[in-house]
Length: 140
Image (cartoon, rainbow, N blue to C red; front, side):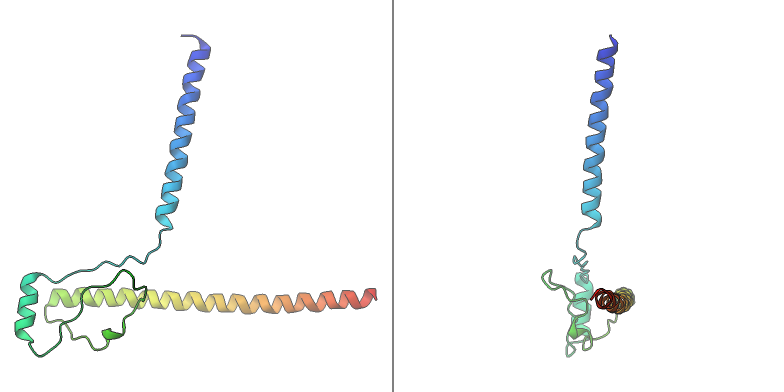
């Protein structure tokens, strides 16, 4: 095997490896930046549904399904939904509500930080405009 054949083989593997790395980076970027509006929906088991419907015939059953087209983080019917009687389902519901509360707090903090940054930018732009006006006044 000559040196040229050996180098061309290494070059070919280098190109293939580079292409694979680029493809993996693009896929990883797309996967990490995918919109997070997909909601996980847990349904009650059939036996629990029957038990809840027989126990609470007069109480409305909570809605356990979420539509994919709804982008709202909190639904209005959450205030009127009855508390689940099964301890496991109640714990799941509490953990889901805690997650929603945490997300809302994070969004609030992010929005407040953006508001402070915007106020700071406005103040700096006003100072910059005053300095430019002073420079124009000196020239004329």
